[in-house]
Length: 314
Ligand SMILES: Nc1nc2c(ncn2[C@@H]2O[C@H](COP(=O)(O)OP(=O)(O)OP(=O)(O)O)[C@@H](O)[C@H]2O)c(=O)[nH]1
Ligand SMILES: [Mg+2]
Ligand SMILES: [Zn+2]
Image (cartoon, rainbow, N blue to C red; front, side, top):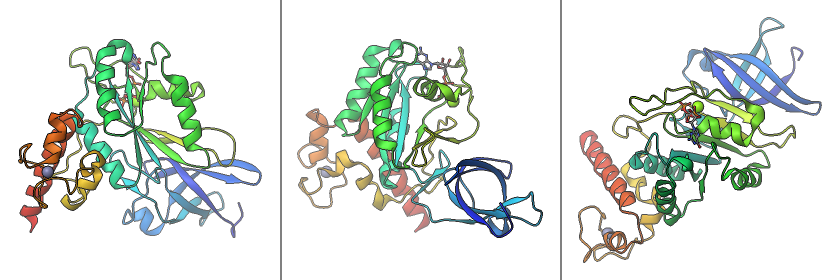
């Protein structure tokens, strides 16, 4: 690059103020290490993996800087990543057993930010019955679902075909979910060239050890319109009380399997929270097996949290 050139690229990794940028050019792909400049450097405007940025030469010739951030499609707080098209929400059949409310919060955040949620149930070799139970809950909710065992190599080809189809044309996806569910192991099974670090979950508390520490985005082929897939660190909490993921008004549309019943309850202002089957079509759907009780319970719990938050700040 000379002093007058500017290039547009994608942040694929960011660590301690240093960013790795991938640039697709006519002569192939470049990987550059850059620092941020101005408000981006001072942190007034935060950069995230996934961002499209403009890079140019800084004061010194060997000094590359990010001079501006292009508009984002979306930005997630957890995992911290931007411009996602799909979010693979990964849960294990066992070890660790999933907290479905956290899974449901993730599906809601994805839907709210116009990201397609996809459910992946891993470790089916450790509990075929459990894997099928979780898969059924999310199939019924209308999300694409994959069941895999990286241990046995099961369920890998259909997921690979799905990724291939859905990520071509430069689209971006991330694997997210609790620590130890097998996100990095599954990414290695899908794309062996990645060789990501993985480690056993703690035997004592049956939880992951936070092996993946940073979000990193990987191009899946050498083609300039390659799809991108991110591995992300596991997390256990999505605290709606302290983080502003979205307001109460956005909750119902974030649960498409519940908003489906809008207008079908006895009272137009039904909140689907306390009403019984006589009044509420959602409660009825749950009783009749058309809606998983865990989905309704997550919805109600989030409703209560967001309602209390709204009352507190009004
Ligand atoms: N039995 C079995 N074990 C698996 C499977 N997938 C992953 N594991 C094991 O689960 C443990 C955790 O896997 P990781 O891939 O490190 O989990 P992770 O989700 O990336 O965890 P973090 O990076 O901490 O978020 C490792 O010991 C893997 O070998 C599977 O399909 N079956
Ligand atoms: Mg990992
Ligand atoms: Zn209702």
